[in-house]
Length: 394
Image 1 (tube, rainbow, N blue to C red):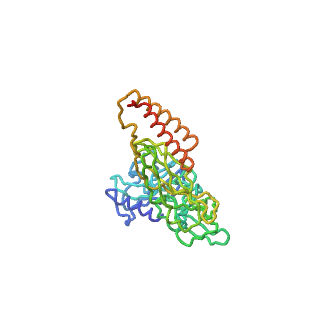
Image 2 (image 1 turned 60 degrees about the vertical axis):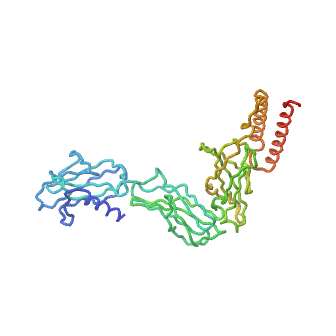
């Protein structure tokens, strides 16, 4: 808080013309730099040195550079002018609001910083996660209505549940606000108790305590080596392959994966939840001749026998690939009527099958792909037979 007070006084001296040196003690404001609750009333007095030969009635007040109306003033003595502020609003910034006493020429005689806010409420939404069991990062949100509007300190504290000594988290350099990372002396297979203490000059509050085992909150890096390619000349399929996160290769766990994909010109992702623990998948029912973006993420389930669900990693960087153009759509035909009937029949069959796929065989299961491939072979034979029947005999 001392640094904040210093900033406020320096601001008053450097950013206002005609400042008189504070070292001469020409005037002083009381109370100096008060901390007040929102909605409070304040009466401040500006005392001037008698040797200045200035009468208090010639002085005026400003708050954040705006002159306050004379109706708020009261001359208490020839050297003392007070101002009364009712129902104070929250400070505009944590460095305080500037209340300044001026002489009749506008020169600053004295200044004070007002810190108007609220005591902290207990923090909420305390959650923690461990990246590859190497650290433990926790984040939270301020309680109540959020910000207190004055300088408030948040401290993450933790200890081993049964025999540990209370410690404070030290690494608050995480880019996410209201978070801290514990990066050393971590213990596996032992529960931690974790909580947040918030304090300012108006009060303090302690969050609810959460208990967790690091192995239950492990997340990992996104899968690496994600590749997307065509499946032969099948115009409505793409093959996706990836590698398990290398940081967890020595751990006993059962990974789960998710895939999401979208069209190049769309922001709507379609998520496949039933990929399981395999590291490859085929996407079916895609548009021919279309670019798709694909991402994969991992959930390290059951590390060293943990029964918790685990935490999903971030998505991998998008990987793009295009499906082949449809040969049936690209090839020409001399018999427009026959071609139209054939295409109409094929479109109807495709619509029927894709409806069945969406209902019964969605996902990466080998059974779905096997049945799909069988259907494709059947359709190719049917298409070939229709062409032979429709062609003229020599």
